[in-house]
Image 1 (cartoon, rainbow over the protein chains, first blue to last red):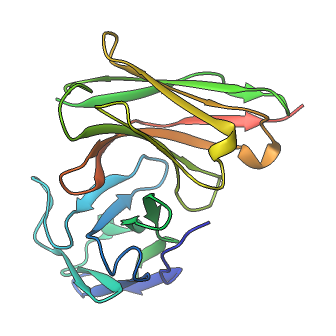
Image 2 (image 1 turned 30 degrees about the horizontal axis):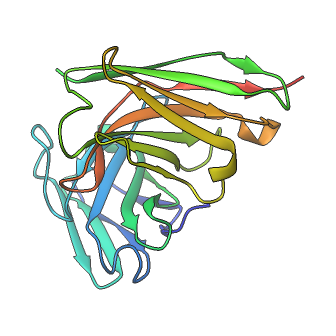
Length: 110
Length: 120
């Protein structure tokens, strides 16, 4: 029951830029910060972006986040083959009184 | 170094109760702002948040699963236990526990996950 909507897939060639959108509502993205998680095949999710734009230590600056109104975006520039993964957005939802995740976007490097 | 690891049965029968334990290290669940959450992921599907327990024993549950979930903590053992009653085949999923920060409202470290299959 994902509350945040993402495109199912995105693809681009190596070295190019890909952007993933995350659409929510006033009860989640509209009022709270957005986090992004990366999930490589067969592994647990890993924090990629927190508080809309912050990168944890060790995350390359090729990854960047933004937020506007009830939507957020993750951009990956200089795409590498190892960036092929599933990406999830997440935010606290004041109505549900808990965190909600996005539907997930599979990024393919052509 | 922060680590979390889930443990419990890999196979449960329909109607049974699932009990999963998250054993963690590298942080304390007595520290203000810290929590441990449970998230699941059915095969090929998206992440779904289940429950969250905070350092002060405040608890939050997914509204759709609230009636079936219990979460407790044992700070002396650095463990959090999730129970889910009346298991059904649709509950087949990989179950993750993760460290939660109230500072920025997210999960910063995740366990490796454990696949639980519900089948007779």
